[in-house]
Image (cartoon, rainbow, N blue to C red; front, side):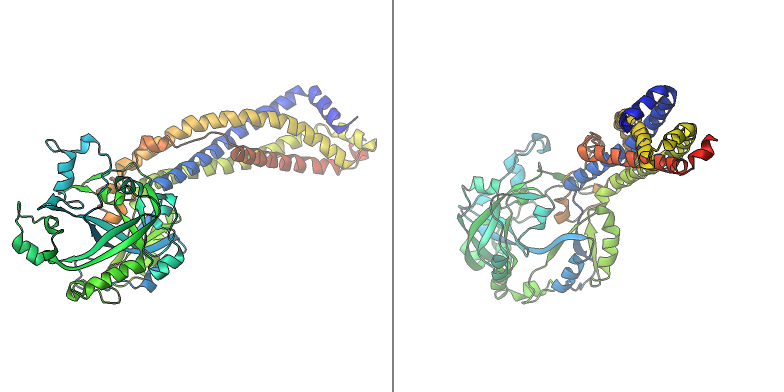
Length: 519
């Protein structure tokens, strides 16, 4: 008779004992499944949160400081080399102009348009890009010079390459005349990958414009005169090849209402019209302008070798590391410079998730520890009651390995059924109990902590936090669905606990001399 058949016959003779084992393993499995399902759901939710609100930082300086030494490229590289940083780049912004290229204006919800104003009037009222007047139309485009082929904006999920390619390292090093533009901008201007766009690198005489121009409500819209050669101190034509087209990865447009000014500021529109070029090429464009007005750049602490105010962007691996990153970076930065980051957007969510993760870990550790302790004691008592049966088999020449195998088969058969029941019950409880607990914890954190968006972030960071994430939206990502990975881990942990408990209980008994037990 095989040990498997013998094990099932033994189980049929002891239904009460096996039912007791079944119930106990079910209860322990429920707690283990509850903890592990909660852990899995929280990790999934955190991944979604990181995609929505990337942990990204930049440098700012104290505006009250009259002289703030600009961080060198070596300092920026040192901060980027910190272990908390997943990727970094430095870039700088200038503006190029065109009389032929048009701005792409994304769709805007009518609810955001002030009463009595059309979308076109609202756009023009904030002087975005340029205006049509005095017989000419000139648009201004934000140009970002980047230093790494794989843009931090892509790695942070702000944009994604739609067609074409990224700039190569050689193109960035040599300052090649290549560019990346948005899909919206390309469609408005009927551009495809490989197209050549012509832009102007202009320096305007704003003092002359102020004398010639007319003022409206105390404001001079200098863009009215961008098309007039009489007001151009310097003019350089530049052709760029469109090597890649990117898509905006957010349902933008985000209207940010400042608490005190209550002004509507568009941070999204320029993103749709942003043009990425190599940083070296941008340096060459600015060098061209500095020879006409060097004092302008000297006033901002810039030199001919370093004529641009750099904007470093640091993408962190984990938002939990934000505080350590800030402290480490401050030791590298010059005086009056400090780190601005989006960690405030994570704080209430991370705190709540960490609390739930702590409870889940406590449940898992408690379930495993309890399973090993109670099952070891229970199996010891049950197997001790079968010592005469085991001794008879041993006296008849049965090996210790087969006796151990029989007992493991008996326990495994009952435990498998119990674990399947406990897995689904615990998973259901995780979907209801832990979900409700997390919701209450998030609400409590929200009440105790003001909205992180009340703190005004630098413009460049607001693009990465385009809107606050509601509790309902975050909870919708709390997915406790069973998958192969979590199910396999559950059975591995539970089988390991039961195997350990059974082995410990049996070893001492099968090592005894059968004659001492029988006689």
